[in-house]
Length: 378
Image (cartoon, rainbow, N blue to C red; front, side):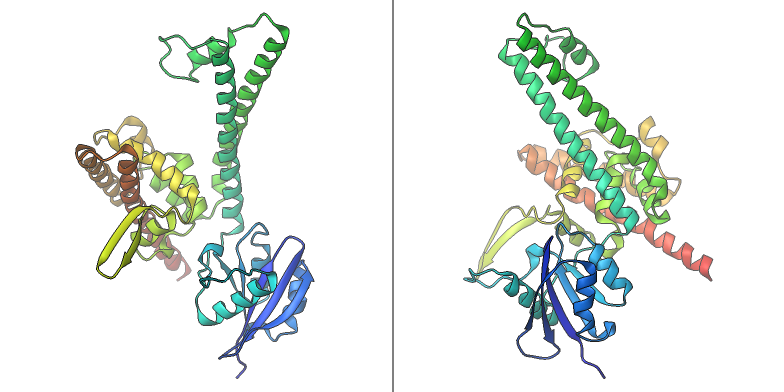
């Protein structure tokens, strides 16, 4: 019977470095540095044995998942690993491509690597679009700040009767401003044009996201629809969660998903002392951001508004979970606020519990979808 060979690849945009460790003990063997292309990687791997003999690992990074898909299609078992979770020896201050490749091969053999979830082509496309919209919102925020600070420098503050910034009334007031100096007027008009351009860009991207949902796998579409039964989770938030997390059932329990989102407390314990600090902030920052935004809805008393009723699932189990979430999260919010906790701590605590309800709804939908597919196949 052929033994398994463990290959570590340190992949960069133009080169990759390879090392191989045989089954059992022994140090990894350095194979060299090569120009990067999927064809070159495949050629190097073919010299090491049959595809079923090989186990390959490389770190997730800017080169994406194309290499994973090509090697997997060739019958090779590939692990795309989380770079921050690769074990590091204390005191090891030397880092080279060769050492990284050898370490990946060694850790793959010992089972010390943590795989990341590799999205499908459709889910990755939607994720790219969602993240582009997020970038657009960041650009819009910066453009608004520049315009508001420009106006403030020249003593132009919005009237007190306009309660909120960047509403229709506020924008009407902004457009009415003018400056005597031609240079200042030109700067002002450019700032306004950029704000309007960013707003139009975000609106266009949101429309494209809505158009992309029908192209997703059926299970993802069903999860997106079901998650919108919860207060605080509308279409964009649900799409963000599905595009970033993918298969919710890959987490055995809600605590694993909470750790993935980085909303669990950090801990430094030794001997008889236990010290817990702020949240870890590891894992997916995009999921953490939308969770905290959604947690704001817990400050309101439980109710099913007309908007929520329109988007609620027809499944009574989903509606029951969503209603339980409203009651539980509001009680949690009120209790923590009454204890004098800071607003940020309250929101994080609520977001963490909200993720548990999200996990329950998504798993209910995914398991039902799996049973339906099995019944159809039978």
